[in-house]
Amino acid sequence: MEALNEWIWFILFVPLAALAGWIIGRRGGQRHGFSQVSRLSSTYFRGLNYLLNEQPDKAIELFLHIAELDKETFETQVALGHLFRRRGEVDRAIRLHQGLVQRPDLSDQQRVQALLALGEDYMRSGLLDRAETVFGDLAKIDQRAPQALKHLIGIYQAERDWAKAIENAARYEEVTGEPMGKLISQFECELAERYRTANQQEDARAAVARAYQADAKSVRAGLIEGRIESEAGNYEAAIRAFERAARHDPEFLPELMASLLAAYQEVGDLSGARAFLSEMCEHYRGISPVLALTKLVEAQDGVPAARAYLARQLKDRPSVRGEAALIDLTLAEGADSTATLSDLKHITDQLLVRNPSYRCNRCGFGARTHHWQCPSCKEWGSIKPLLNYAVV
Image (tube, rainbow, N blue to C red; front, side):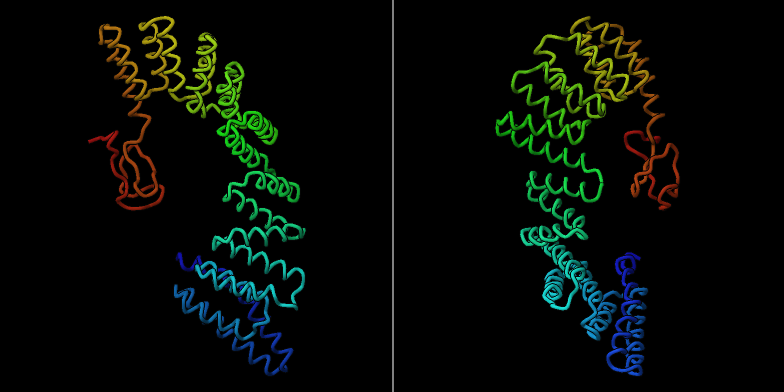
C-alpha cells in the first residue's frame, strides 16, 4: 500500500498520454496518430497495472518509454524529473530539468515551472547556493513568487542567515496575505540570542523589540529580554519581562521560574514573588509554582506552615515531586508522620486514578483496563501494563 501511495500521482499520465498521441496524430496523419495513441494508452495502462501490483520499478521503465515517444511534451518531462527526485536520483533530475530550462521553445510560464523544479532539485541535493540563485530570480516573477519565497525562507533557515530569512518571510506575507508574524518573531529572537551571547546588548534589545512587534505575545522574546536585563543588572526590568512571558503562556513557567525568582531575590521582594506565584497557581496546573511557593513560605513562615500549605495543594494537584517535597518537610519538622502518611495515601490514590495502568506500545493509547485489541489503532496484543502503575 505504501508503494501505491508513493506512485499513485502517475494517474496524471492519463491526459498526458492522450495529449502526446494527439500531437503525434497532428504531425503524422490521423491514421498514424491513432496508432500512436493506442501504443501510448497500452503502455500507460501496463504501467498502471504494475503500480497497482506494487512493482514500481517496472512501471517506471514503461513511463520512461512514454516520455521517449514524445520528448517534446513538456509536462511529461517535468513529471519525470519529479519522479527521479522522489526516487533519490537527484543528478538525473537535475540533468533533465537543466535540459528543459535551456529549450528555446518554452513559454514564460513553462520556463518558470522548469526553473522551480530545478531549484527544488538543487535543494534536495544540498546545493543551497545554486538553489538560492534560482529561487532568488524566480521571486522576481509574480506568478511563482510564493513558492520561490517559501523555498528561500527554508534555505536561509538552514544557513542560519536570519536577516535574509526575515526579509523573505516579510515579502511572502506581503505577496500571499498569509500571516508570518510568529515565524518572523522566532527569527528575530535568533538574532537577539546571537547578539546577547556576543555581548552586543543594544542590538539584542532592538531585535527583541522587533520580535514583539512581529508577535506581541512572544514568550521567547520575554525570556530573552529577561536574561538581557538580568545580565545588565536591571532586575526590575527582568522581572517585568519574565512575568510578561509567563502570563502570555503559563506552560513556560518552569522554563523561566528560576531566573525570575533570582531577580526577585536580587531586589529583595519576596512578597512580590509570593504574590506572582500565587497568581500562577491559579492558571498553571503543574506542581512547579506550588513547590516554589512552598519554599518561600518555609523561608518566611517556617516549616509547619510550608508543610500545611503543600499538603492542601497536593489534594487538588497530586504529584510525585510534591509527595517527595512533603516527605522532606515532614522529616525536617520531626512531627508525627501519621497525618502525613494519610495525606500521601490520598495523593497516591488520586495518581492511580488519573493515570493509565496500560499503554499501547504501537500508538501510545492509555487505558485504565486491559484490552487485547487497542481501541485506537486496532493492533492486537499491543496493550501492556505500565511498570509505574502496574496492577499485578
